Length: 142
Length: 314
Image 1 (tube, rainbow over the protein chains, first blue to last red):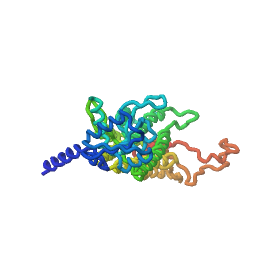
Image 2 (image 1 turned 90 degrees about the vertical axis):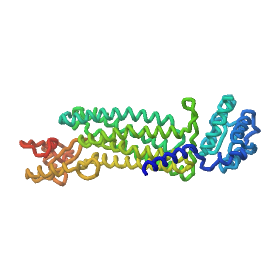
Image 3 (image 1 turned 120 degrees about the vertical axis):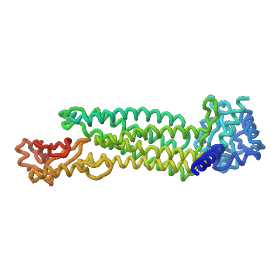
Image 4 (image 1 turned 60 degrees about the horizontal axis):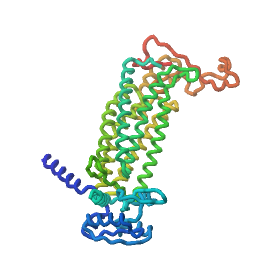
């Protein structure tokens, strides 16, 4: 009896571990096979555009790019109506404390300094963030 | 003051070794936790608690160096209470930090902050950073719990308050580790609130440690009667000494106070003033005669009055 219970518990743990981590707001699930909505702060340059295309491909999703002003886009990111905000975002962006940033996707020249270029995703959507980072890492290897 | 019985000295030496081990392990824990610390509030709180728990071992070792110093003209009683002073200051720091961490985890809950933990590359593998955090937290539990259990009996035998609080904090460290693991695992499950809730739990623990240590050190700094190590009750030693000294029939009450691990008893009237201002004038006090209220003299006994050798009336 005890052994079956222990076995069951291990099975549950392994099952849980496979889905680890999960998104509180199910971003990864909602994008999978659907539409990846990207908020663009500026008309997307090649680096940003390639990155979001790779991510959309990894999720088997159509890509829709929505241009708008920064504050509206970050509000949309927060409420989940876009999943990524892109467009010349340096890794030390002042929005840093209210969004989560992906791994670097390239360089960015900003006021004479070279900085790492990143994308912004919603805070706490950890499964989505990891899958985005993995898609970016794969494209970097290719 | 090095008139400690050989047995107690041996125990203190053992405690010193354990505290050096504690410092070594704690530093390694603080480094490991720092390396994997992401934006988890629970992890940050556990890290702060581990960093703060460096203070008691360090205080114990410093106290051991200072309390054995011979009395000087400036410190005629030696420095027995230096540990209590340091203890009080660190207790105040601990309490402040605990209160601050409760505040910050409460705001994280109220502002519905969703903790982000990404992935990392380790040995060419891509791994969720949360797993590393859980491993680090599990490591952070083992050495303190083992050392804490070893320190606890030594603290009782040597009547060392700093060592005792340190041992208790260490022995209860598994709660912090478990709460931290629960917080990180909660993030993995998609429960954003689990992290701040776990952090709040750890913060309450820090505050409680701080307040308890503060109460223990305050009673000594305020010339309170010797207390038991793990409760605010008066130590039975006080009544034992009292009974034996009262039998002398000198008609004064027996006052006992604690200086570090030592106890000083004195036969004085209840009111506090034992000699009149006139008497003080004769002793050599002048305008400030009112300040001299007691003159003590050590009494010698042919047969041991106390029930154990440590009771040395003064």
